[in-house]
Image (cartoon, rainbow, N blue to C red):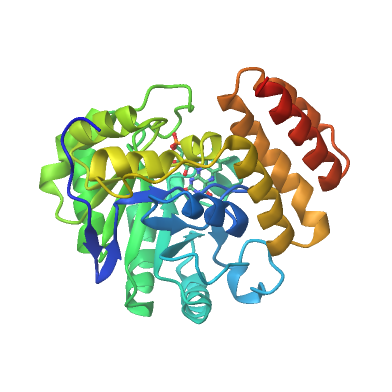
Length: 330
Ligand SMILES: Cc1cc2nc3c(=O)[nH]c(=O)nc-3n(C[C@H](O)[C@H](O)[C@H](O)COP(=O)(O)O)c2cc1C
């Protein structure tokens, strides 16, 4: 281990986040099986669900909806909702209370056309009048920690970002995650961690910095440039489910001496978790989605990705993966 050790605990409205490393909300990826996989490798202090449509939430069953299935060990877990309509909030929050959420997050960064058309995600972030109604309803409905996830905005303007964060804070938001890219920017664009650093001191609530963290060195650089209170990891944790554990050891001095699980074992564990948590017809699609990212961390990983994409059942995928890992050890 080398370099400075950062403050390893964050408390948000009574919720302890230690280490301050969050697993990002990712549609199709951050379901129960993946959250447990990453948690098993240590180092993750906060879990998020993938985004959930607030208007559907009250009608979905936690026993069979793959979006709501959760093992009780998955804690602390913040449920991320997406909506543009304040009327959907109260019933959705009531449901989240029943599900035992540790916190609620509002998605204010999603640029997907379907959300844009509904005035949600990044569009709601730009519509302060409507956003105020949504946040007011959220704050009135819950005592749980309330967070939002935003991007940097539609252009580089530190003063606009600063006043937006102050507005969020004034509306009762307890924590802000900032994905350090502008609204329309693709993931191949380098994240702009330093822009967070320009506004950090003006904002009182904790800030998590997100975007482009694939190694402990990235996490360190991100915190140094952004001054953020913690980091949120997305694709890096899919490529390397042990990444949060590595960051926790190197930046926060947590979990030192812990042995890292072999990649082949991680993959086998993930299949087992999919089998434990999901109905048979829901497993293979999720394995394929995970493998698209996971395979990227291996030399010749495209062979693994292709063989899993072409698998017809989970058993075939398991056998093909075992062959790939046996060969890659030769
Ligand atoms: C497949 C995928 C699905 C995503 N789904 C969500 C989502 O449901 N809610 C959200 O706020 N962001 C979502 N994101 C964005 C991530 O949370 C994160 O902000 C982004 O991937 C940048 O972080 P990273 O570079 O660590 O991956 C998604 C990203 C990916 C790649």
